[in-house]
Image (tube, rainbow, N blue to C red; front, side, top):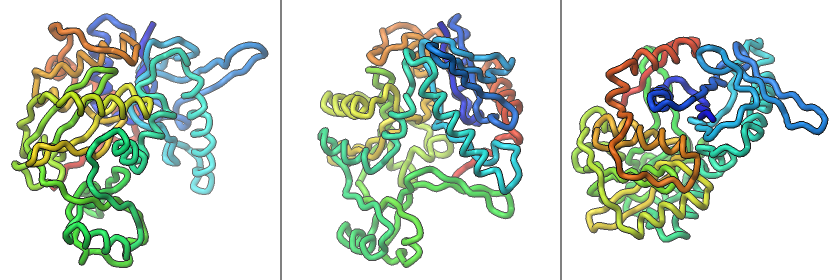
Length: 370
């Protein structure tokens, strides 16, 4: 059987790397780019009496048909949502066309190879993306969670910030990026905010306000099945509230870390509650040696950490996890067959660019934080 990779955004190079890794290990892989649908790609469901639905979708660089194949695993790299820009409809019809196309696409995900291991299943992803629910469950299973307010009420926000010392960490629920008139980009991120910065404009958009933790390090826990990789980054070496944002620019020093058994258990409990078989859990270790929970990202990136710390066998483990096709996967200690550095040395850059050029209207715009 084959592994299916659903590439919602070809701007992310890890999908090309995983496809390369699977093929280097002599495993079949299909790639579906629904981003081109419906403008330049097709998707069809056919129902016949007493028969399961047949699925036809344009796939891969060679425009193969994924049809009704059975896959060992399906990696849904990002949440799938068909946008107005994905249609060829006129301005007045684009919203309706996108809604109709999205309806068919979402149904297809639920009908596609039901026996496969999903990484992660759409219904699990949608639940896990809800940050208020994440914090509620994290508290119930014993994680330490910072004092938090999620609100668009300016009065409540000012009152909350006052109670926690006059300064809070400001976060958005979703990542967002904007282009300015001179073609520069900036991205939403965690930042410090004082109560004096809150005015009536806060009512226009709800956000997350959280007490600042005196961190000694940020810790990312990458979970693949039952396999955990914990990676620590010194928070004292950057001015960023979230030092992970700076890892490629000013603080590339990261190192594997052994988590306490209790924290490992809490991470796996969190994954099990949401039905996730893969995810990146963001923690912090404070100066008193206490771990704090911030969030879990069901689609978090992981290969950047192997790029910085080549001893981490993340690409090889993820490929093996997809081939294994079981949520109880646990890596056996052995020499990695595929490494991210080998992907980069081979055709990594060319492959990533080829995916972008074939499956997007314009080349990717990379965003850097100032």
